Image (cartoon, rainbow, N blue to C red):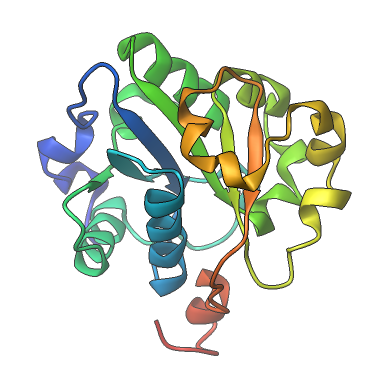
Length: 209
């Protein structure tokens, strides 16, 4: 089993960005990464007109305690293998700063990158349980959020606690290119092609990546 300490140093630093850039933050355990994740990233890149997207491989997921997690180095390697867009930057910088929760990650990113326009990206399946995330309202107040459609979760943008709480901050999907430069709280739901792949199904041997 590969140790997380075998992760090359370049992945433990935040990717380089310039002031004024529009940058998407797409985090997850990616256990394992698959074509559905790539589809979400590609839709976000195109619809939000991003200069960069950070594919953030997390050391662990507090909401998924008890599930077997492949070593960080392996999840990074698999992520690199399936992403070929040079604007998508695979990173595991959270491991260097010992942050566990998304709210802490976003606060750290904001503090270290003044003048950069970040937007948090999540699949609609995550939106359903977003209110269970640590300090979820702080997340929504830190950066705008783009929710990308996922199979079986299309109506989450109407029924979820987050959608109801921040209904006033929802932006029209047609304005997605403006989202990264819109002050938080602001969010939009982006429809598009959907993949039925899931990391759980792959781990259980039900489908192939």
